[in-house]
Each structure stands twice: as C-alpha cells, then as structure tokens.
Length: 164
Image (cartoon, rainbow, N blue to C red):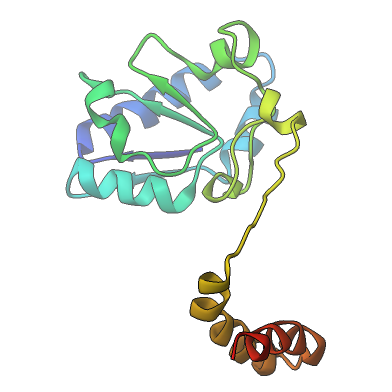
C-alpha cells in the first residue's frame, strides 16, 4: 500500500487509524506483515501525488478526494480506480462488477485488468502502395541493416529497385 497526500494531518490520521484497527483485527499479525512494505508519502501538491501514483502504477487506486472525477484524467497508470470515500477496494474485489484480476508490481504502466478484450485476438493488417514503399522503404533498409537482418533488408531493397 502506498498512501500519497499533500496533507500531513491526513497522513497522521491514517497512521493512527491503522494502529487502532490493527489492535482489534483477528489476523493482525498477517496484516502487519503486509503493511511492512507500505508507505505514507507526503508531497507538496495533488499534482505531485498523481505523478507519484502514475510512476508507482498501483493495482488499486482509491481517489479519496472531494471531487475525485475531476482528477480522473490525471491517472495514467492503475489497474482499477475507486472514486471517493464510498468506494473501498473491497467492493471491487467482491461485488461492484469489475474484474479482480489486475496488474500488480507496477504492470499497470503497460497493461490493464483482465476483461473480455483479453480473450479477443487483435490482427493487424498492412497494405502498402508503390508510393508507400518508396517513402518508408529506405528507413526499413537502414534499420534492417543496423540489426544485421540481411534477408529483411533485401526483401525491401529488391522492391525499391523494382520501382526504379
């Protein structure tokens, strides 16, 4: 868990509340071990908080703000986002309708959670006209040469020669 805030009082209140709740939690030792890797991070502004969050790319991101939707466009990397005080992560885990299979360990920087799209195949199609290969072919020749892929280089070079 990473809590990022621009308010010292919020960080202090959360730290106090964590200790209060741990005192009554039946599996407190397990929770304490999980919290060992957690951090409370103070930043100068909400903008800085979003910079930290986007770099961290959390599996779950709770925007506990007065107007969370207003800040939603600042989120660049998160597995699942929960808006406001009434949307705890546990609802997403169990019953709000989102999938619970989410990217962990910062993987939200490059992938989202499991969805129907995860089971669909995307196929790309390329069609290149004579003018197209004339325009981009020399770049492909140069890159293939730099990689030492002579057959790739020749596949393009032969076609470029045919244009001459």
